Length: 399
Image (cartoon, rainbow, N blue to C red; front, side, top):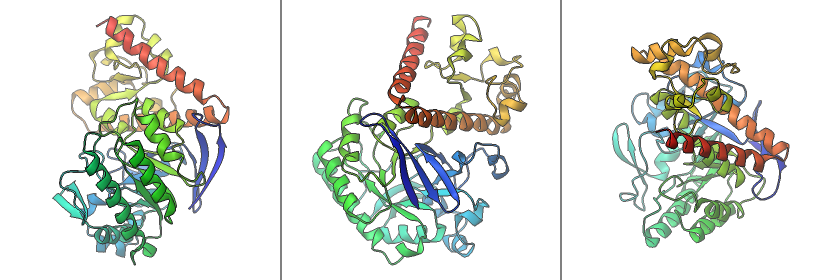
């Protein structure tokens, strides 16, 4: 793995980098597409080619999903996850937790290993067992075990989680199996909502021989106001030449907050939850104006950036989700058709909608990179956040 920072504009300006693995080169900040066992929940391998490349080549998965079904021995014998799912050119990032269905159980974690809720029940994962899984699936990048805790735990528990995460990191990278993974190791950084513990963990992890950093434990109860100080305490203690990935910042505003702190990769289930609820991303303000009167904002989510395709107003709407969108769904289907598919509970509704939402959110990240390159990221972020706030205020007045 090779990572190069191409553009950066001081504190709060973000940075643009290039992540290269083999023949695949991807610009950052970038989105790691969430998957189940290596594939997006609603997009089949043949439809992945309809997404923008190479932005859509970054796929995040949890090794925990393979604790049932196909065995690790079989995956290893087939040459790893790339061969199993038939995506040899894609980049797989292994993260040891299920970000969709569960959070780490901070109460039952112990010094021997991390406790996770898995498809086959509550499981204790020791570093040696985890490394066996990683060496079998052979991801391009993988993170070490992390003892993530929510913001409200005691200081003693928080300190213990940092000590434990550091020890697990050492156990993972010193394992005899570490050299068999063939992938780049990202050291996990925890510390809850304590600035000093975040700083201590970042400093210790930075001393280790890791290719990058996985900033864990966000989105677990800390406030938006707390995050800038926590993120700064981490990033100022990390080397500039190594990539940084973060868990727990999923909403667009949160992504912008992470980019401002110098984060490069984002693990997000935002697209999945939108698609499951029948919401289509539509960041463009013109999209709202196109529908006319203000009272039609009720068919939009309260932040004005997505539309509810299950709403009856779209039952006879023969226009695409977005007029200027060149995704497969908008080029071939109408809101009326998607509304019908949702009403009859047809699985194709989620397939088509996830294609659009993924395409649109990847475009959001592309806009972020362009804003950084042009030295206009601060303006881009301010404008976007204010626009969302104005839509929420307008929706409240008309409710």
